[in-house]
Amino acid sequence: MNKYTRSLSFIIVLVLGAVFCYTEVMAQSDNLVRNRLKRVALGQADEVRTELPDLLSEFPNDPGVKLLHAVLVDDAARALPLFENIVRDYPQSEWADDAQWRIVQIYAL
Image (cartoon, rainbow, N blue to C red; front, side):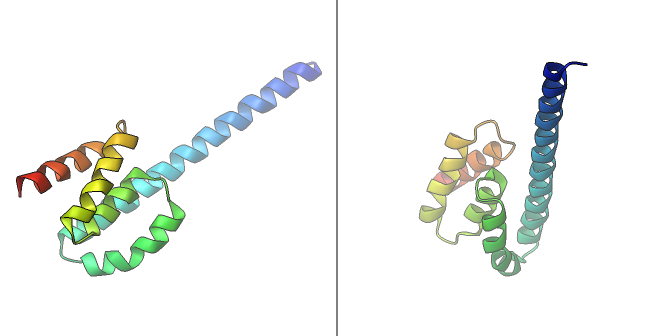
């Protein structure tokens, strides 16, 4: 194995490791969001609201955490732009459909 081949192998391993770590972090945040949304549905919104600042600081650009934030906003006029942001900025996210549905509900009310 020459120097070039070893360097290329190292770069490939490094990139694959980064992709794996990113995927694990996204799966972790998705599970956290699902759990918190269930708790909100069960009437535990106040407890989840106290956890939100930590989630926002740990996952600031996660669409699921942004959705959770929007769900916890009491004023629909303030929540609407948060949902719209998810649909616009993260259209391929699994949370985009949920955000779109919430937008429909806000307009229907």
